[in-house]
Image 1 (cartoon, rainbow, N blue to C red):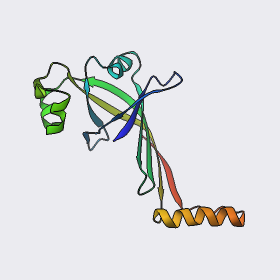
Image 2 (cartoon, rainbow, N blue to C red):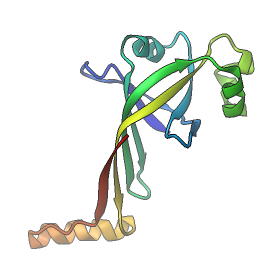
Image 3 (tube, rainbow, N blue to C red):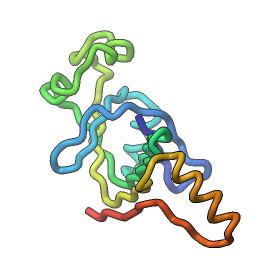
Image 4 (cartoon, rainbow, N blue to C red):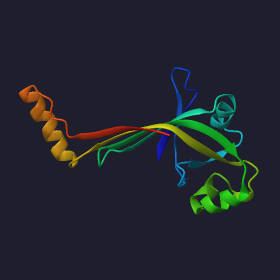
Length: 144
């Protein structure tokens, strides 16, 4: 799951939770979306999107900036299909409202901890008490 943000030039961003269906070997990220959705309409105007992923239990975070493309491809929809999708697309892969969103990342930033969450928290507290940085994190930037 991620927060999928569109309208990046507006404040506040337009964001909603979305379930990632697949990440291809080339890094493309796939989602299902309704053709008449607000997000699709916003992507038709501006293809730039921002995806925010988090795994708070492991203190892992991912920030993906990229470009989205609205795709109609029944073969790809079949590949990505799962039973839960029928909730939003009752006619299955033949649902006229079904579109795919393909996000091609442009820049990715990640944060992770080297140790578990408790050790990271203890290091932060110790650093605050001692007045010095005790960084336990790993972070980086990936530009495609």
